[in-house]
Length: 92
Image 1 (tube, one colour):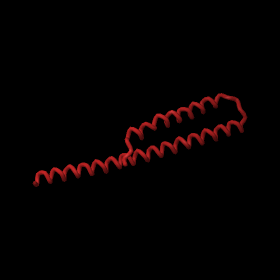
Image 2 (cartoon, one colour):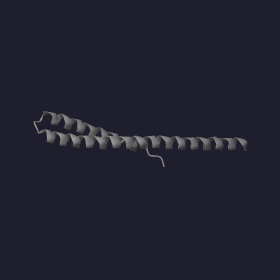
Image 3 (spheres, helix red, strand yellow):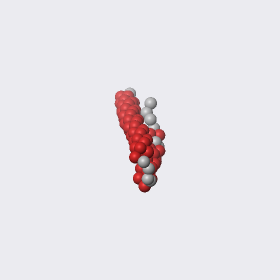
Image 4 (cartoon, helix red, strand yellow):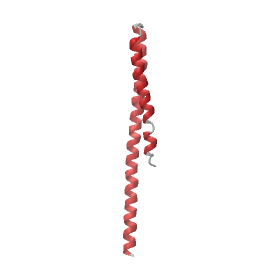
């Protein structure tokens, strides 16, 4: 069953928003005066969030590729059935 392209693409704003949140958090944390250990902990958390975002992007990209492939298969089958129906109609 092919995935609707709109559904796959609707996930993009959420991923972009999450990436913007990570960037904003990095910029906010640059200005503070904190100990090195706190900074490293925060950096670790930000990197973990970034990894989750990248994983979501990769999964959405895979789903989009599957949707495109499935749509091409369905379109090819439909075109083949249409040509076959036309040939049968002309033959008889």
